[in-house]
Length: 398
Image (tube, rainbow, N blue to C red; front, side, top):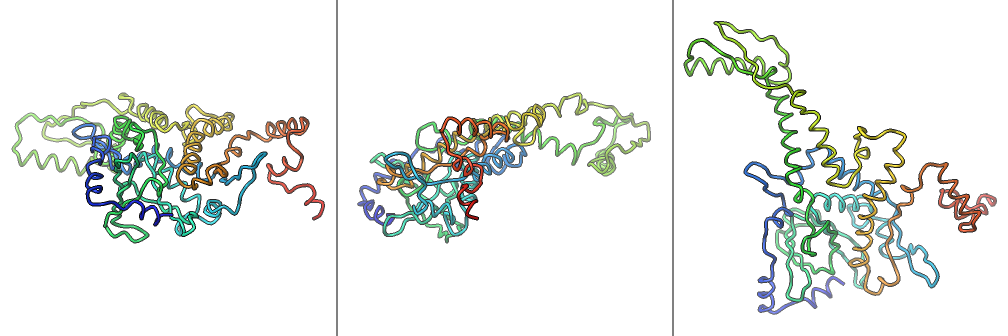
């Protein structure tokens, strides 16, 4: 399939020149997708910097690992109902891994982390001579430049400098039918925009708070203030005093040491304490802000300020319904659009199963099963299968 598309997409020099004119303008938002966004003279946010914030790392980890843990099935549509098609090429990728380096869970986790941090996740679709998909090969978004062709279709110019599959630093072009492209919310309908870009000020403020706290522990003097002397000091005396003071009182290992002054020198406190400045409270609020940025309930990432062990199951269902479900639909829809062939789109569908997260506690679950059984909605064996038990007939035979 890939080689046929490339053969059909060969252009004359005049057409290639026309394509280059259609390349999207590099706006501030576009530059932000590639690496970061400048929101001030000293503020710069990019994915690597953002993941130094524990809340960002925890949110990305919680969503991507939860998505990776969901069972995935390829269903064949029947005249009445549907059935799992384990022989479909996509089903084989789920079972044995989408490429030689990743399991299905690894690949889904990578896709979700990329789209959450960069707004986009891209994977090349590798097919055999019959058109059956044999690989989904991940492409770092930093290696990609998107081009809008005169036909209205997208092309992806990829320059891989270092790659597990043999990066050559030579650009190559993939058409939109040759890639799996998962987007976060887009402004132009073509490429996604990173949440770190949309809320760069929030992330930058959080990072500044963390940098301030790190500096306080690394270089801070407690209490913070000034040394007053009666006479004017020479430049050499000031430097000696500053260096001696730094060696004796700067850094966490020197915290709370007694201050010894001589020659009429006095210590004057200048600044408020961290508690007075409500610094710790502002850092706690930052956790909620960043969690809100990713739509992740704070208890899911370990912040139990407003959570208890009695509402944990409710929080998990809320997480599944409000955080994961939109991403599940995006992944399923993108598979239907790009990975399944045109003929298979009407007969097959990928589905990520969220039922495990939505079941509730055992008492609620078995009460629901009882209602389903008495109303003749499910058979006993169907309920046993959902709970992980073998059918009764197999148990009796054993």
